[in-house]
Image (cartoon, rainbow, N blue to C red; front, side, top):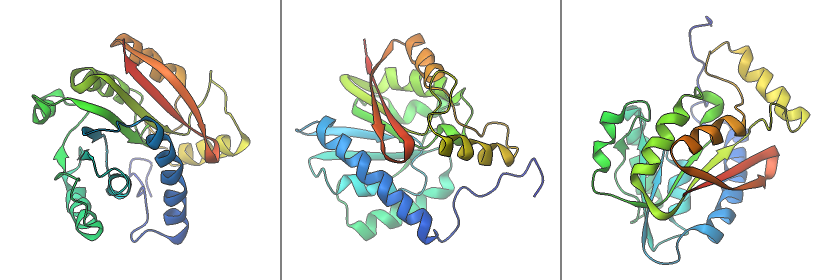
Length: 217
C-alpha cells in the first residue's frame, strides 16, 4: 500500500472484533443519550453516519425522536437504508449528503433545527480543520437548548491519557495518511469557542474514550 492510498476504515464484512467494539462503544454512548436527549418529540442529526450502525441502534431506544443520518459519501447511503429496513426503524429518515468542509451542501438543512447533533469516531481519521465546519454547521442548525456530542479517543493538553491510546495513535500514524491521528480536546474546543459554542461536559467513557458535550452560549 502506498503512502497516498488510504486503507479501509473497516473490513467488509465487519470482523467479529470490530463488531464487538462497535457494540461496546454504542452501549456506553446510549447511556449518555438516555440522560441527555429530549424526553419529548425532537429532531436528532448525526454527522458522518458511515455505515449507519450507530444511528439505527440509537433510534430504536428513542421512538419519540426523529433521527437524521448524514454523510459526505453517498456510497454509504444504501447500507444505511438497508440497516434501517432490517431494524424496521420508523424514526430514521433517509440519509442526506452533508459535507462539513463544503457549506453549500448544508442547504439540505435549511429551515430545520435539531435538538441534538452527534458524531462518533470522526477526528482520529479526519483533519482537525473539519472541526471548523462542524462548529459552523452546528451553530446554524442546533436549537437554542440543544447539545453537540462528539465521541472518540482524544489527547488532553497535548498528552496521551493512556499507553493504549498512545499505541493506537502510533498505529494510525503508521498508515501515513496526513489527517489521521488523535486530536487534542483543546484544539476542538478552541474552534467551538470561535463560533460561540461552549464545552459543557467532558464525560469519561470505556476504552479510554471521551464524550465531549458542547452547547450554545
